[in-house]
Amino acid sequence: MQPLRYTINITLDGCADHLAGSADPALHHFHAEQLARNDMMLCGRVIYEMMESAWRAPCESGVLADWMAPWMLPFARAIHAIPKIVVSRTLPSVDWNAELLQEDLADAVRALKARPGRGIALGGVTLPRALAALGLIDEYEFVMLPRIAGRGPTVLAGLPAMIDLELVHEYRLSSGALALRYVPAKVTASPTSPGTP
Image (cartoon, rainbow, N blue to C red):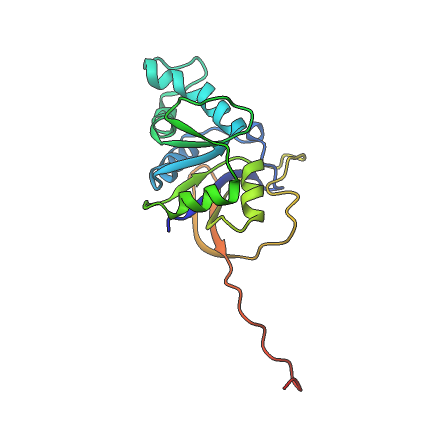
């Protein structure tokens, strides 16, 4: 069973809007390495379209967009190359090294996880919330940016129940961001209270 790994940048006050983040070489390098740990990426329509509009043309043409710096290329190549599974009921088709997933989400993701492989990357806000509620995320990696946004959207807002996590790894980026990797806490039976037979 390969793990489903959710990685997202968030500000110190929990904002998950990509416009609230900051692009820097350390962050791009970190995310390129995280993608390389996985054999595929699972995403919703919004993330798929956003990533495709930013990274596809520069990778296929070899010409950097006006806003791109050369240090962005390793991430661009990583996101371009990784096979993508796009969850959408509105897209008629996808073609950027991608396949469309339109069947039952829980069953389809369980089937993906059952395939042999090193892992499945997961990004975005809406789809991860649905998968977290279903208990299907195996790793959560929050990249805490040294910034306060003062607004939302906040990560995983609206979950129907709390999820307890155990910290398994932390990594400080040279930019001042802190990557914290968690796994769902193992549920243990509560000890018998005194006086209970």
